Length: 165
Image (cartoon, rainbow, N blue to C red; front, side, top):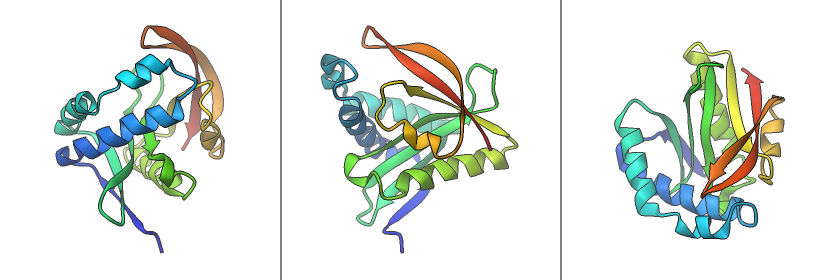
C-alpha cells in the first residue's frame, strides 16, 4: 500500500510546491549549477510564481506524504514553442522521497493526462549534467535536440527528449 497521495494541485499548494522546488534544485544541481545561484533561490519568490501558475488553468499535480506535506510535484501542458505537442515543464521530489516510485507515479499522471487531452507525445528538456536524467530513459524517449539554458548568468547544456505516449 502506498503511503502517499497524488492529486491535482490547487492555489493553496503554492508554498508546499515552492519548498519542494527550491530544496530539490539545491540537492539535485549542487556541484552542477553555480553555488551562488542555488543559494539565491527564494521559497517566497517561488511561492509567488506558483500562486500565479495555479491561479490559471494549470496542469500540476502534487504528491502528499502520509502527513499531508507536499513532497513532490509535476507540471506539464502544451509544448511552449508549438514545435511539439505536450511538454513536461517540471518534475521534482524532495531528496528523501526519491527512489520510492513517487516520481514514476507523478510522471505517469502527466502522461495519462496529456493522452486524455489528445496529445501523442511529450517533450522534455533536461540538463545534460543532471544526475537523475536517466530516470526519463526508463520511458524510452528519443534524444532529438541539444541546447543551452542560461541559469544565473551562466550557460548550461541541456538535452531535448521526445517521448511518444
